[in-house]
Length: 537
Image (cartoon, rainbow, N blue to C red):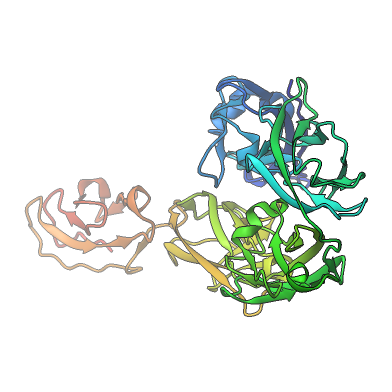
């Protein structure tokens, strides 16, 4: 079952006394920004089309609003796991969701995206939590564990075992280990700081090579799912003769720090173990435990000196800390274990990334200040100050940028626009992080201003004079007049009309005007013969 909870915020609009309520609310609220957040929880591996939640109901939106606002999902991910069915107002599974592929061993596992509506613009954040199902068995990376153990090994000697990996998490993850019954070893289980379990054999009864030179045991790993899954690895033990001292590390825990992006062969730390035996039995070799898993691709240890180096790409954004299990082994097969904790220090190696969620162009020149023209998302993968960003507009333009939700910014007008003065703007948004040195990104928006009929036609002169001969025939041009309108297209088309008056004792209607096109001059034409007694101004 999925569940959803949502909180929707809204802007209250007040109107000043003496003004029309509907007109004021329209101008003030039509560009309001509404936001909400809801969260759903579903199990992984649901079939495509499976129901996740009723977005319309949980956000308090009706279906007409979803359709009129062209509701859609926006996400920067390559795979869109969900689909919004705007006609029903529900969210369904769009693609296979594998929790292990999506989040590895991170808990809880979730992904977020935004639902955007237009006219007016609304942005709602939805988080979908993916719960685990027990679809993986514990597995070992090798089929056999080989030990060479001296018959003089003392009771209490410890022998670390390879760990099993289980891609599932929580109760479905690796729960415990079992060792087949035997007369010599018992199993002890431990957990790392990250909760990962591992086991070791502890010798409780001395070995006798002459009685039994080889032992064959099995290590079984089981998870906590229902039904329970398990994995098995063989333990082959060869009993060696006389080596009665195991190596001992001089520290139980080593600590080191490295900077991310450090070059290959960068020194990390040197571990040290000593063996009280003499000759070949005192020679110690160092190696990584199988517990280190993928860390073996990032670090190497010199088996003779115990020095650890970097051999791969250390990325703070991927892992901030590494915990390595180190073993020291002598020639007789006795071992000791220690731990190396490596902290990764962040550097400012990621520039902010700007994603455009929505952008409206053109915008009407009579749009009031505060009109939303765009929404952008800014992300910086670095941490602390290296990941803190500031957003600004470079040019001196009548726009401003405002932060809304985390990582989201709204581009707004902040003064009156005039198309006749500036018909379009190139708005450059610069995002800079707080790292040293700072990294930045830019994005330029081309915004066109649409015309409204806010200018009256104007004649080039206040008074026109004309002199004509008497007895002219009708249709003779008297004078040319011209007016201009700074608006454009239909708003700039001009019509000329003679006001009703009398000229020379006759009505002005006996004269006519002729013009061609919206911006052509107007010509006055005779409607009858003129005599010396006719005058007009």
